[in-house]
Length: 486
Image (cartoon, rainbow, N blue to C red; front, side, top):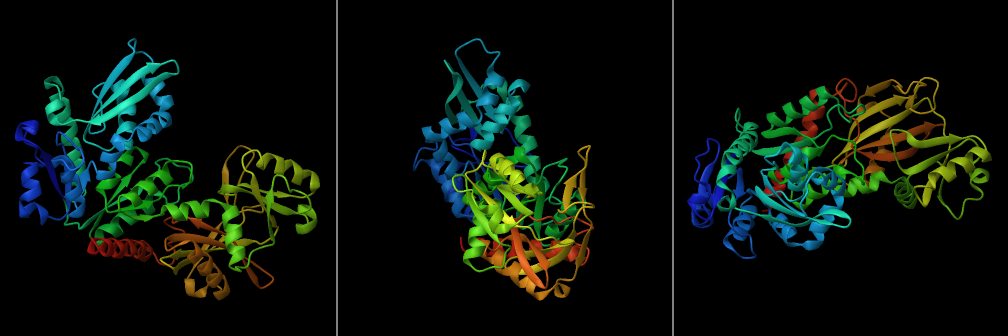
């Protein structure tokens, strides 16, 4: 992976860098050797990104060449949009107030160099602002109001704007950034870069540590340099060709924002934003599966103003589900009208619609993994001991799981696989885990999950390393297809 630092004039960045080549903007825009380069990260430090200026064209043509510019043209436009700046100020309000509380003056200016600030006190805020507006050199302007501190303006700066006393810090920070940007491809010739989003120390991760390393190894065998990234790497997403989310997804938090930004930057993304939105809401799934005549247990979508008759229609016990429930949390079994009314009141405190479903007791659920509209693996997830779900918590808060058993996909019941495949294909062409119950010879789809578990020692018990390779091959094919189209 080649790294270019592009400036208007050489004196704007006169320091030689081991891992990067410093060139002027005219050379980048006009010299054929740069347009023909592949696998390039461009750090655009031009003095202006004004529309149709030299700096604007550096980022624009970098995107056209398949290079990875920082900032992207999208970020350039965001920096100029007051509404987006106000939105960023609102999203980071707590951190802004906390970080700037000790300041006595009514204005404050913060310099952000490759996501960092010279004062440790402001490091977290600097990183968050960089993640919102990924640009090598930034300057944020804050003002105190009657409601506390507000971000009034944030703008890109060039090396020409960096005070002399700040240069040692800028060089040190840039050197670390460039080493990280190039380290993934030092040992081998990698064609593409992938970010694998995960959450360190997550007690219930979609993939355990060993599985994550197997994904990295499988990617490398196909010429993809995969790097494990975290929530703090939001500002780097445009540097990659693909994003693989191995962190529990929610519409209302950072995983969805990662997916949205990656998709907008042209990356191949699993889980894509549409899949996250669709799978996250059980009301949507109930409506979708019913409309397409996918077999599901008797289901009622209940509105807070129309709650009568649920027990009579479904019988007891029945199951209530919050629309955004996950890991069996927000899914409860009720045994009578009193419990039903109590639980509905609780669920309606956060959603105007909830799902009520016929209770279908089984000793295990089928989990059929689907990728790229094809069945991938099959597991039996057994209920936790003494419980009606596959996961529960004991009296001291420990999470308990039922056992799991992986079988060859060709040995799974054909009707279960076909129901799962039809359901997943209604969502998209990503990676899904479809839960299917078998009762009296019939198969009922319970839900379609984006971001399904793939853990070493469990879901890979049959395919072994081939499971990871199959997933990475889909990424490779999609990246190649996307690159060929640009």
